[in-house]
Image (cartoon, rainbow, N blue to C red):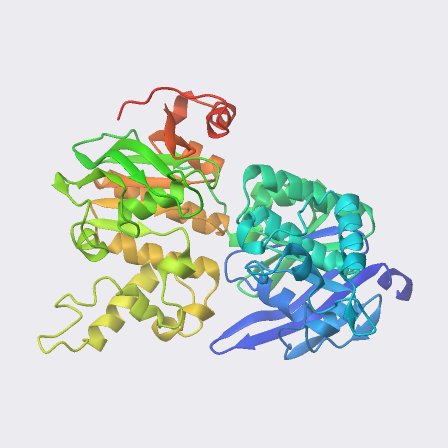
Length: 515
């Protein structure tokens, strides 16, 4: 028995970790073989990030032991983890924005001789590592100026610079473009071929099937099982993960578009990054009873387009009409009251007040209504509580302490469900959904897609903005491709292919589009 144990780089045995009102990890055992890529799969809030945070020393478990190379180890903090050769790329990167790539990589382990920083040595080591693993970076670029994909490479180099042997990737593809995801998969394979052992948290089944050797599934904090990916299917994994069979295809009837709800004419929005405009002369219409999707590679003006539409940024020129009324210069609250809902791209920055309770977040845009505020201007707390509890039940928002849970403490997927519950329950004429399923598991994605289709079928107009090609192909009734701030193509999802869309998204083709 002793012999077989030592081919495990890491063993987490019978780990239990509790938080107020919730057992995040309930007696979980995970064994990572040397040189393998091992996926950790589970719904939002299943306990994946918590388990990895225990391994990295960010949390201390109430029960269980961790072994490295067959020997019991104590990991009190991330410095202990680093000393044991364990590194982690977090879902939300831990980088200093105003530092260069090189300074971020060596931060905390700076090479010093006679009290002087030896940056030239560090630079050589970083460049050698980037060459060896195919991680092309510019060591002198500032973090705030580089793409998310480059920031992630910086995080990976941070681990390699510290000679880490066990690499934890927490949801590494959630913010990457399809091209960057391909590159990351190759990098992970290179690392594993060099003998590194990788733990890879994901709920994207295709990625797990492509790169992982084995996969451990968690559900509601419990261990469900470990399988070899070569001997399983995406259907089997998704059933293990959510406890039922999941439909990967969106079920919907033909659309019956009605009146024009959203009419945008010649919209131009300035860019904060460059001299030229981020959105250039865009015109489009969305009708009642249809889902229109704006597709494109990240950074082609979609964010600024949504900011202009929802009132977060002023327009340089152009006109926006909602249900025939000019809303071009109205405030965000007025747009909201007139029937616009917005599921924002950045749930932390624009979707939630993280230090408010869940119930307060659910009434953020309606607290001033008579149902929630009395004539004297005081909040009607009982009504807010019962409203929140109805939405929490209806949308299956999971949190440790129900309506009074602080939003910051919830998992990303459950934060997203809360925003979607709030925005749809306002019963809007126009629902603007930006990356509504980013970072969600298959069960939650299926649920949210059903909600979007239900809004459409109730005669609402839905404008979806998505970077996920399978979502772009599956959910909308019409697709508009945005490239460099302009609409360069309009497609019927039933009559196009991912390859054709890809050519327009990359700017290789364009057509004249009539609004």
